[in-house]
Length: 206
Image (cartoon, rainbow, N blue to C red; front, side):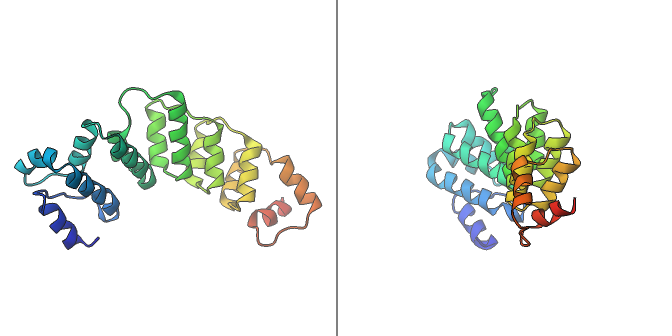
């Protein structure tokens, strides 16, 4: 959406949103949809000429917009935006399973700032966090998890890094003393090296 059109859309509802940066258009589009759907409740905001994106998100969340909260939570992790994550996390302390699922999702998306924040506020993680990072090539999150004492399934980390051809993640795991998966070692002995797989070639040099 072009800047001029975005300004027109927002001003049409008596709102002027200062969006956070050029890459956050998706965030602003969502706030526009909220404003359009809940126009009556947003009339109070027309008393102010300038309303920032954060204020609109907070308003939507405090008015029990569960679907909006879920969408914003996902978007915050995808963008690795700790400021938005702080606004969208459920109030109170989530259950352990939700804590672990959020940590896994941040690892999958390589949102290392969000993962660090979740750990700082006491969220639990499990061995699947490092496995997800290795599977999706999230090197920064894998390094953070291995460095900060995340529970680890060493063979699964190295197996997924090799299968998915993430050489940087495989090297990182081996540097942190992760055991090489027995399945991969067996296949290396039995089958010919796949020249298109950098992990295969690398393992033959060890």
